[in-house]
Image (cartoon, rainbow, N blue to C red; front, top):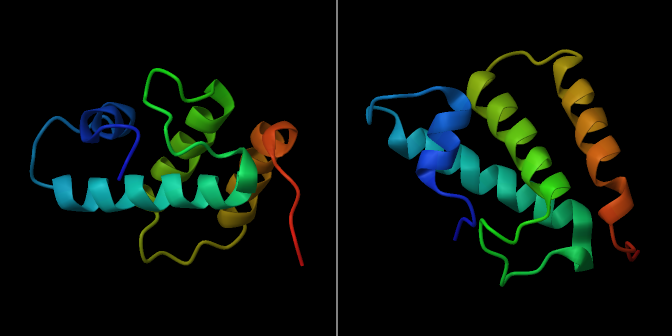
Length: 99
């Protein structure tokens, strides 16, 4: 399902072993799903890792790191800060939302 690879995610997280591959893949899938939902109609399911727009890539990586490093934690205001960063990166790419 992921556009980005497990190795892309492990490189971003600076993980060199295979001990946490399932958790990393789950965090990557979650991050891509959240970004796809955020941009709505501006998400192209035919994108590859080479054609994924840079803002989308950056937003996926923001969420990947956040969700992997803070799993189960009391997030306090960290969650809001990540959402603010994602919003700033993606707002220009976001399609219309429907009520």
